[in-house]
Length: 299
Ligand code: GDP
Ligand code: MG
Image 1 (cartoon, protein in one colour):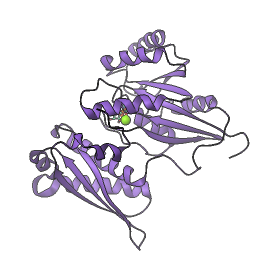
Image 2: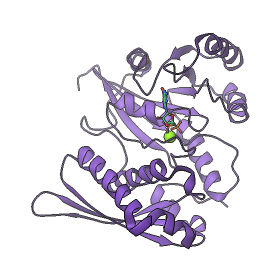
Image 3: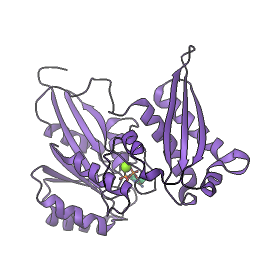
Image 4: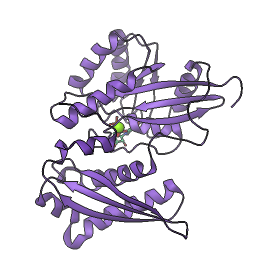
């Protein structure tokens, strides 16, 4: 870090599945947030830290903003708007294919009154058809008063370097908020639990009718340099427990194997992962679960 150091916060908002977490990972240059085709994968606000020369860009990855019904939904929406407070810029991400208008429109409405600099990123250019995408950009620009519009693919990285250059240039002078080697504000234990939850979503998809949670239990360093992680998968009912376990335990074995590999990559060391499943009715109504996730308990 030099005397010219710059640092600021960019809040990344958008409807569920727009690709916010994928973009944050792409900007940081490594995985800090889990992603999946399932809406509302991101539950709590998470900060990813990207570097660009002398500039540190702190990215607030937020849960998708949607109409809240359950207590968990309400807590997630609160966390999303909280992520935009004190940001130097707000980046709205839109999936041009599945626009989720019912969730996008109220968001545009709310953004109108925000004093922050607003940027629009039309994502998934690797899949979208050009003409309607350009028409959408124009329409949103009229509604949203955006300072700039970017066309990106968070997945392939197309257009992301240009976006990153631009974000870096917007950041104010000031000391870095995080040390050079820190990529997120999440602890290793939280990230580990998130990686397992991502595998649950990726491997079970719609077979898991209700959301599941992954609870951290233990994180032990072994003398040989490897780490032993114990987690509990919490579902609502015994029937769901059977789904997670699979025939003869084959499903949980596959989930554990994939999560373990991913974690070894992220942590750069050998990981021993122990999972067990518990059916616990009403886990979503328990306060401690929210505290674990860093979400506020809302009535
Ligand atoms: P979030 O809910 O906004 O955080 O969205 P995610 O980052 O979890 O992404 C939702 C889904 O869209 C995942 O399956 C991603 O792989 C996918 N996705 C994200 N960005 C792109 C993209 O640029 N192109 C394509 N084809 N898929 C993407
Ligand atoms: Mg997300």
